Image (tube, rainbow, N blue to C red):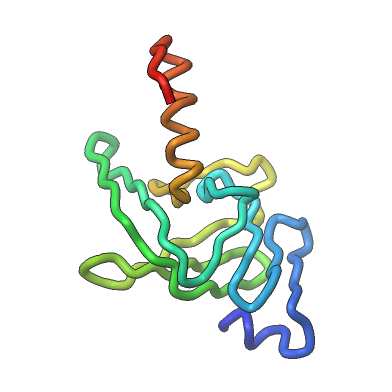
Length: 129
């Protein structure tokens, strides 16, 4: 069910534990370690970086565009367009520990570079930003 179909009389929806909130017709707050964006907000139509891990060794980085967000009390389905197809990724809203047990992470470009700088700091690299 599309988010806009759930709340025709309201532009805002919040799930029971506050980990998901519809902010507008196209913007959503998702408190999940799988979604690393500025202020944990995603927007339909915006481009993101998708990092996926396959079999624990191979990593694929893709540029994607968020096209649709569907939700219920327990899950949020994020639909993204890649160069080749449309894909769907699930966010578990019932995860009280806010862990990302998925093999993917969705980032905006600002958060992507922030995470890279943090990794460099942890490794002791003194790369200039």
